[in-house]
Amino acid sequence: MAANTKSRRLEARLEPAIDDLITEAARTLGQSRSEFIVRAARESAERVLARADVTIMSARQFDVLVASLDEPEPLEKLARAAAAPRPYRRG
Image (cartoon, rainbow, N blue to C red; front, side, top):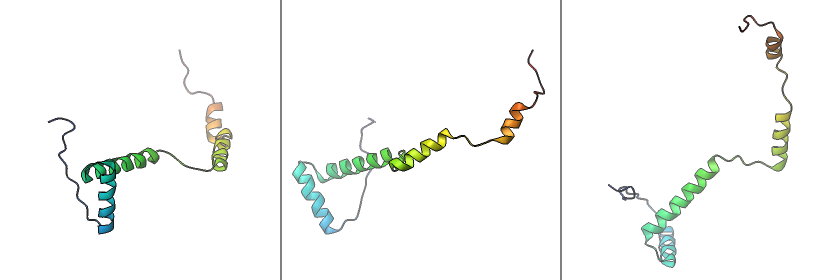
């Protein structure tokens, strides 16, 4: 079976106005309704997934975030552990 074989079916219930809109748009592009719907759904899904890994914030929020990364929090317990004599020595 080829990788691009269409083997799945998608069905949807539509309001008549939406159905007419899809039909007219597909006709305008010279596509079948099925081609139009699949292309539109694929493009929409790709857009959604492309944005899923993106965090959108204002420039001010971004500046605050970056500044906070430059200011390390005091880690007293870690500092004490690093300053303590080592229980084991190499070689």
